[in-house]
Image 1: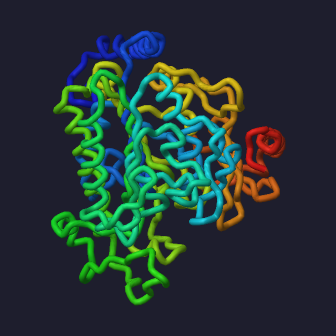
Image 2 (image 1 turned 180 degrees about the horizontal axis):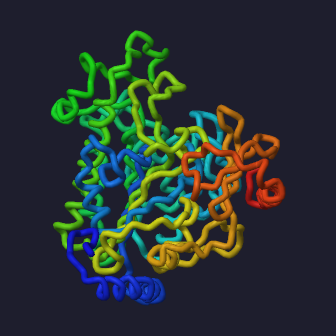
Image 3 (image 1 turned 90 degrees about the vertical axis):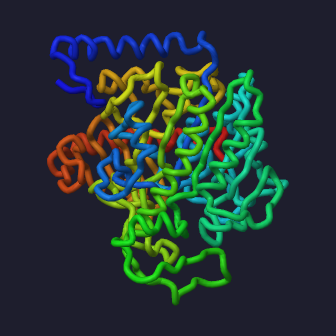
Length: 477
């Protein structure tokens, strides 16, 4: 028998090691709060699909740094974003609360007055209270106006330092003109966002107090459109590109209709590779400064990809891969919410493992509370579940249902999942499809007619859950 890293185990040794791994993880979790504080690097990328990495099966895109991270950690096959859009997904990840509880139901348009309320308690605030140094580099998008005096900014919600943008970079990834440092707008930043964010992260890590732990949230711009890459990276995928590469800028007074030409997936592939290179710079720095063993690294995508089924002009020439799952960003089918996730800390967590345990972005808060020295808030409803103990046994002990809600283009705005059953409902909570994901991961066979009683039970569970959100005293009215 051969391990994931190529080491040959005899069958008895393999079985013994597999039997001991869950107990090892239990020991790690039980002793986490008594151990020396662990640094946290949370890498969140924008619109990356389940099938967009080499370690997740993409046949073309080169992602050596993230593939290496997977080899040195646990790669998840049933990790779900809390929403199929960025703002609600990020709100849930930082608070451990369903997006609708926080009032972040969809992506936040500029000047809409929607923002994450200061009464919400974020992961950054919880770690800062434990003497962590905290920084956010990259995308925020939890308010409608960076720099506003009336809407909380990253530095109001637990981050000591912020460098980045809000919804997406303009005009493209190259020379962005909408970046801020803390509350202050910056002039055009020369370079590509993958490099800019990597370099800023390294500068912050270099300047921090080495005697205190850190929480760095590296929130990459890629591969969210509008994309642009260095010529050398585009050249890696020239055979997948038709014609000359002409970037499609955003942020102008009107859509650049003349530039909307399908040129194939080469630029998108290059953008994912360039994202990987930027992330690799930061991980290399952590390795070189000999803090890797004390740094927990989490990598996730905020939601599913924009596939070549474009619905907005700024999506042209995005070619994200869902790994074959149905749907895409904006929709609550698997392709919109099942995304890649990796966790790694060599010497502390298992290496080269694949876990099929189902969990969501909302669960990070409770799970990290078991791995890091902080406690989750007890004065509010928390929708987060600690799933660390399930990873190695590869069997879920979750006793709670999982719920998604999002205003979608097709009106299928609600989902409840219990075990392997996934019920999709419309805006009025009427059932529209029931799938058994264990037998039907591509959501092709509707089981409503075969399981009417189960459908009724799931509807009532979701109605009760949504009623609890409606009555949540912290929910914006």
